[in-house]
Length: 412
Ligand code: KDG
Ligand code: MG
Image (cartoon, protein in one colour):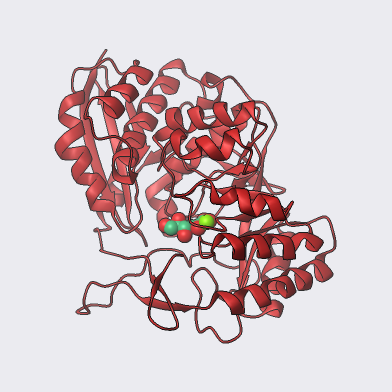
C-alpha cells in the first residue's frame, strides 16, 4: 500500500494546533502533531509546500526510511520548523502502522514496561499561600508530583504564574492573542534574576512545610540564568529535595551545565527547545543532566525521540517529555505510548487540554491516581474531529517577550 494523501489541518479551539492527516491507498488514516507555538504557519508551509508532495506513493510502512528521507535529503537539517514537520509525518505513520496491526502503539514499540506513567502537573500562585492552595487541589486529585512556580516580590507578572482555584483550570500557557484591532505583537514582561534567586528557596520551604517530604516538587527556570546563577539556585534548593530543576540556563551551550553540576546535586532537566539527539551529545555522554525534556512534536516524532532515549538509556538518563498544552493531544498520546514502552521512563509532564480542545481531539488516554495510561485503542488512540475543528479558525498568537528592568531582551 502507499501514501495517497497528506493533509494539513490548522484549528484553534482556544489555542492553535497543526495536525497532519495521512491517508493510504487502502483507506487507513493516521494523525500527527506538528504544532510549534507562535510559529504554527511556518510548519504548515513546510509541510504543504515542501514535504507533502514528496510523500505521495511512498510505502507508508517504511517509517524509518521516510524519517531519514525527510531528515537527510533536503540538505537543511534540524531546527524547530523542520523537526516539527518531520514529527507530524512520523507520528501519523506510526499511528497507521499500529492501527493496521490492530494494537495500541506501545505494543509495536516493545510492549508495556510499566502499568502507568508518573505524571506531574503545574501549580502556581502569586504568593506562597496561593501556590499551596493550588498544590492542595492536585494532591486531592491524587497527583504525586507537582511543578511549583510562584510570583516574585517586586515583579508584576511572570510567565506561567497565576492564581487559580484549587484544582482549577491550568490554561495559562497558550500564547497570547492580541485584542481585536491591536497590533500583532507579543506582550512584554519584566524580569529580575536577583529577586528571583532570593525568593525561590522560601517558596520551596513553604511548600515542603505544608506537604511534607513525599510529594515530588519540580521547578522550571525557563532558561533565565547564567551558569553561575544556575549553580547557586540548584545548590540553594537542595535542602528541599527537588525532583528536578528544569532549563536552568539556555541550552545551546551544553558545556555550561558542567559548572552547575560541579556545585550541586539537584537533578537537572533540559531540552524542551532541542530538536535532535545531537543537542544532547555532551549532556548525555558527560551525564550533565538527569532528564530529557524533548517532545515528540518538536524532536522529529516518535522515531526522533526514541533515538534520544536509546542514547540516554546507556547513560542512565531518563525521560521527562515536554507536555504543555501546545503539544496537541496527538503529541501527548505519542509520549504516553513511548513512555509506557521504554525502560528509562522517568516522569511525564501533564497539562490537561481544555474542554474546547478535547471536543476537537477525541482522546482515549486516562489519568488515575496520578498515573497516565494511553489506553487500548489501536494506533495512537486520538482522532481529530475535522468538522468540529473547522469551526475554530487560526488566530495569530505570540509567546511573551521577557526584558530586564533596563529593557534588555532576556531569555525565558
Ligand atoms: O510554548 C512554550 C511552552 O511549551 C513552554 O513555555 C512550556 O516551559 C514549558 C513547560 O515546561 O511546560
Ligand atoms: Mg519548561
